[in-house]
Length: 408
Image 1 (cartoon, one colour):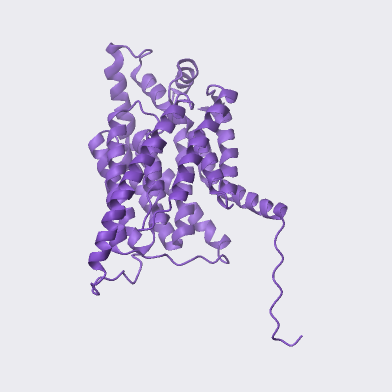
Image 2 (cartoon, helix red, strand yellow):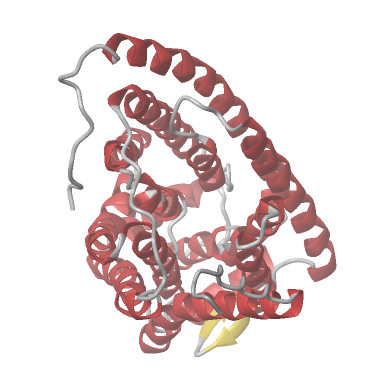
């Protein structure tokens, strides 16, 4: 050895070792997601405790993409936003307004390269905004269970029927049911717990992940000029706020949250549009809808099992968890389209409380994906021209510079 010889390359991991590592990471992330909701569910015996898992997912992405400080800020923000979005969902105008505020914030943070870290905030807030999981009052669990099983209602509808004391949806009882649905959204105890669920769910991964990721190098955020961030912000704000207004104005559309997610996920930042990635996402999600339809043919209609006195769609949840783990494994692979095929049915099944039939997501999810994709492609073409014009106008202006520091 002369000391000048190049170091021997590290041996590549075998496929089995690589898959085992990915599966271990996926199981660890799922465990972190489930831990807060399971503990809170045992304490409260309320299905809305599952919101903690949504908060955990937001916290995981915030820490991985933005660091601990962004993770802490995001956990506080989602905790404060959750009750506000539930109340805002009472009107299409207020719902669209809160969605616009969230997406404008995402667009502003794109200047500092932090938009991916907070992207899940408006996406996940769309669920309580459009179809919140209700609080089951004491003494109504048995009646809610019977209505879920016999009438094929959503959990929200079953609780509203039980609260209104009506056994049918005739014209005479419609007003009572409507008032019960409104009461669910403005109940102080419920809103306080929802804020707590989201905050605890988001802060747990913020406290755990830094230790697991301390030796993992993370690339520095890529800052973007105004010529890119302004068209991007305008696109996601107009499309997501418009979709929110439409979905709240048409409450029978059970898959509205997917439309908002499609818009935010597919909208790209920058002048170079990655059409291949966009097409993979669209086709992958459509494949996921077909997979969901096939799985529900096998699983059948949703059946509820009583856990700690609360009706839970356990079969659908278990299938959704398995698909979620496989989706995380696929996320670390070079074949991203597999991730999109798996994540669509996983998300639908893990939100089974918001729909009487998960299969209802099928046709509407296809429509949402196509409509969202068409809107994003049209907007991308418009903003592409706009960003190029802005970039050309500012290219000679030396006074316009990207900010030197993150707002965090």
